[in-house]
Length: 603
Image 1 (cartoon, one colour):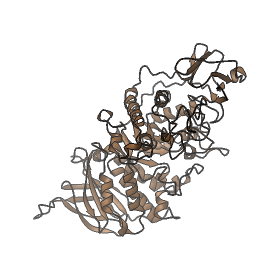
Image 2: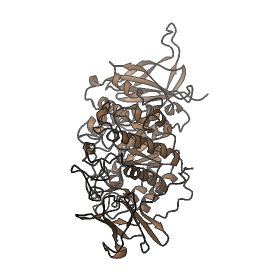
Image 3: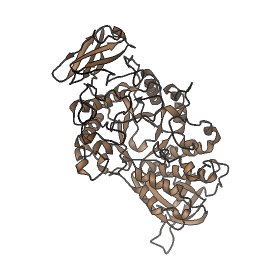
Image 4: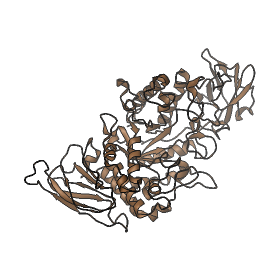
């Protein structure tokens, strides 16, 4: 059962107390603070807040009700500012009013436990485009709930949502958060998202959220110069007011050294875990939390306060919710990011592996077979982030890899003809690399039914492709089932062991062995032909002699009627006489741009 911190209480913003709400806000440079809302006809003088010695202002407002809207009126010597609550749990828009939400929800029976890292299958999704919205709006949480049975049937067990926190406008990727405690109002309500999480849990799927703490905004950002104070033309109390403020997305890097800002981010993490029962987070661009320029080996620009904040939050998360997961997007291959806090690391459970995606995509997209670097592919398969194979997330598509001048993998393989034979074959190879290599596999929405073009926030998934390419969808389902050992014959795909024992640069064939403990039902051999030529009677070694059954063949006509169905159903492996250095060899036939996965039956 999910484990919670006993003493966690959100005591900022509007908190129920007695017959009303106690409001509390941090504004150390204000001369006076009032709350103006629907409960007092938006009077800027009726309800003053009292200041304490630490720059916090508070008041008990007895006539506040669920659904009321408000802003803070913050008065200084020279100006008065009308601000949304930094701790807005709900809002009608990013530049509208804070709303008092109804936080009641029946979580009884929600005993979901996050799968172990070795058994995680992540599906990255963007709520605004996962489904088609109504009347010109983006897709909604409610519509996404209707697709959860589909995701369950696909076999994924972790849903990673691109940022759903309130942002400026109706359309966005979400990496411009205005209110980090509130759900984007165009997606749905507080209750809607709680129903989404509960429904996902009921189907055996975890929910993790993409969080943006490397910068806020920059649009519709009420934190900016929140109480009027700032220095060097910067952002005021929530931000650095020197060169540390600069990020690629604006001068809005939070001041990780201020206790109140550290608390703001820490409270946000624990709030989403507690209020919505989410199962973890993917932190966006953490290189820019630990270094001003996002660099490694650049101590002059390091942000030790950012590093220690990540350490503290990741450490506390495990106390709050023991099986929660923290994933970093660092993309520098820095092993310290996933090292334990007590070893000086940042304490993330896993990080996105840039080397894997860039190498595998390059090998698949190359127009000429001679351009494929099989040694680079070998390195991509075997790279790790430490002593645990599952400290990296591996993928061929993500929101970044299919936008910003790049497109979906099938589109990159064959521009303008993403459904061609070559695009279908090579995208299938990409799936094999993702699910058969050591690491946590991740898909991007629609990848499993050959979605094409490039990702943008006003282009919903074409769900008709699900019916158009049922075989491609079946290919992903079969690979996921093998990856999770659902047929009790491929346990090694969840194991730590990997050995790329065959690299043929000339013929573009690579083979590797995966295992947990080894032996029948465990050891798995993957053989991939990355050329446009068939390889008949191609000889490779196996971990043991005996009968090896082909569990998956990407050339099967089950996946596409235009595929060749080339390859054996099983391979008989025997020791070669007079060749003690090459035991357990067998000949196998490989179709063009195809892969086979083999294992032995349990005895």
